[in-house]
Length: 250
Length: 192
Length: 192
Image (tube, rainbow over the protein chains, first blue to last red):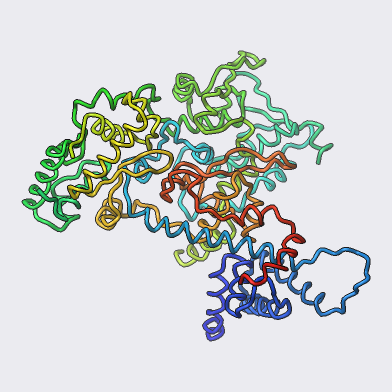
């Protein structure tokens, strides 16, 4: 197993080194000196699939974009091998033309990205007075008027609850509670005819993410008109009830 | 009087630093002795003066920084006229976020989400014109309802309230991609 | 070459301003015409150069700023060790390129050009303040639109968006259907 990983490493590194299937395709065209306007579909498809197969043999996750491209190429290849029906009435869009368009476009943007990188190289060595640097100072996490971005607002939203700052490793919890999962669990908690408080929903000593996830979920449910919120008297809990629309809409 | 390499380095360092730089720091970053640094500072200041620049290096708060001649104070102060002072605190930002997403809402609602008293954050936001009182809730006690203002939109560079990201978009914007998570997993697995 | 009062005022204003100052602002604050301002800027830069200062006035992000010579980048970077954000990844640069040239644009548009998921690149660019949410597209789902910021211009040393290097083929390609591209092949084949 060890040798396998070692020998396969070069493939892994190569696939990782690409910014997606278009990048890999452009690499193959360059490597095999192929004109982008005259792509030998069968050859390129085979070469592309070698990379994907190797990665899969090694049980590496292959991003879905690669798999979609592999399927497209395979289809193009088999089509190219079939005899052409010149009189088949139907005007079919040539998938090769679309792929070419994508490749040419992506190649152009990749060139621009390289230009930007050169500018970045130059301009990170130039220091202007004083604006940009203020953003790097550790104590400027607070917001300057006019500088606050929406992201600052959203980050504030995600740090709503007091308490210990999140440790990076705890952030993995985010995947454990998506908004749709929250809706799923509320579906049971806010059963028809039942009244429940926000506190009861999030439970005792909830993690910050839990609060935020459920808070956002409840906002969404209110927006959809699936729940009503009530407050019996000042300082009391916010109580939630399902409306009839929940069952109607979902 | 010609500025040597050291003088130029000192100038670049002092210019670029957001805090005054001490002699010790200047020595460290340039790899020179205190005497050489003092000479470089003298040369720079003589050059600024001789050639009628309005810049000078001054010693302040235990270090050196570049300042403009005092005589230009009036001209320069025009830059800062009408500038909104102060920054929003974390508490104010959090409160802002709750109001933005659940407006109109009561203080109690905000507090039940933030889990802390929000009086002063709300007061700040009212003073800064970020929120306004938009009515009363028709429940016992008829608590005040708060909503966001135009100033709020301007502050966060939004042209329209409906440009606030939706809940699925928030996940997208704040969440992590699966590949990032995998990296963390791998990383975290070794640590434990 | 002696710097006159106007040149000194211009110097003081540009030095003290947090943001790049436009010609119009410089005119307003000094009560002078554009020609005089340009002359003052030239004089200042000649003086900096003639007397071996490491400073220059540059045009960037829609205005003028004082900047240090590039050769002092290494010395100055010591000030920001551990704080200066790293260079952008290839994914972020490609995403930046797409947004710069086709702004305002949606995440889907970026992903269809790059052929990969761009969530984390977009998030990085938002965090680095290089892009902002500038609205929603009026199509089903009303997706968020992204545009570049002033910080983007400053980061890449651009004086304004028109100064992006021109790639005529982009607009052509973005708007072109595949059959049109096919036709182009007929006479474009010799290009490679």
